[in-house]
Length: 113
Image (cartoon, rainbow, N blue to C red; front, side, top):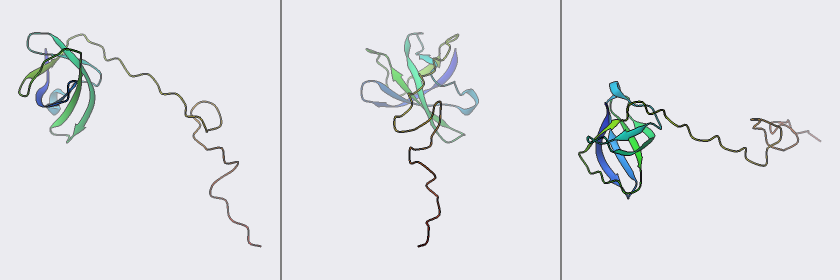
């Protein structure tokens, strides 16, 4: 299995922070497992420096992992991408139009009377 990272912090009941290696950076939303090949959860965030990035793992229910544990990417797990967000109301047009319903440009020149 490919090394994902080492647990550096446990946040609440469902979040783990891993310190990863830039050379072996796993893709987002891929599943991770512990040394006994038990699925722990999915990688949901990537942040930090380019040389030593951090990963956030959203754990499954009932998973126990502590600081110092090594986690690995589950081989053959295809990352499930999150669903697309709905368009916010208050915008006109179809598709991904992002212009507000103001009736014109917000940069119009003011008329001098």
